[in-house]
Length: 315
Image 1 (cartoon, rainbow, N blue to C red):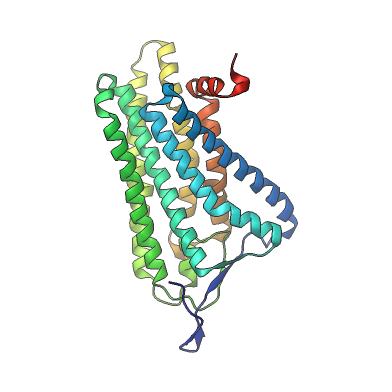
Image 2 (cartoon, helix red, strand yellow):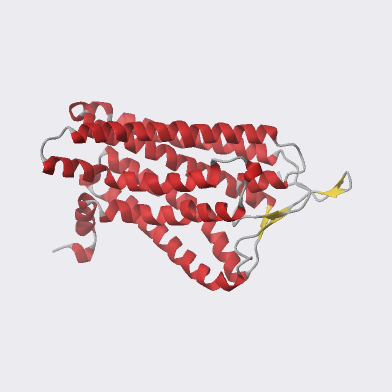
């Protein structure tokens, strides 16, 4: 519920925030507008193309591509939650966002970003089973299990986003109202709160520990077993083929976790606006843009499916 502008202890509750964005670099406004417009267009069209190709190509109806289409969906949600507002701010130089709009943005950002991290772990597990336990792959990664895992990811992350957004909505914001970022994010919002934030800080640390540490270790463990299994393959061609099936995932994991560690694995008291903006560009714009390119340019199965689906790819 949006707070009212009524006096409380000689203070006025904030009903809207001002996103700092990139206003400290006015000379970069138009170049940034062009860059973000290209990134957003490529991200949405590229991920939509992946969803379409996976859905329309029988050859891609497998667990790996099922999870890839889920990842593409979350990438679209993530970038569409942030970049339209960024583009509007750069185009009009109007960077205000309502209180309810800020909470809305925070929820969908947390939901999509955390879902992407869990999906990367699930995709790593899928590749581990495919390479290390191929005879049991069809049983372990059955359609029912895959759907349950995807629903679990979406549900757990929606609950996580609801908890953090609900806790944020309980805080009082009475000024200043300038968010030192180009979107609503937990650390800069906590710094603006007029009420105590220990519960929010504790829950942020818990989420960081789960998504940034435990989940990351599980992902690394899967790839560690994969690498160990590949190294036991005697033929060079066998090693090359095995590595090619998971190289795209490794690149995506590296890009995503680099941004996450820069943005979130630090206390709110040590928040750095410039560092957080760079990390924010990585996981809200660059990562959703790169993922379709990574998974298509390095994947012959997707390329063949695209050739059959697109009119100019048919012979």
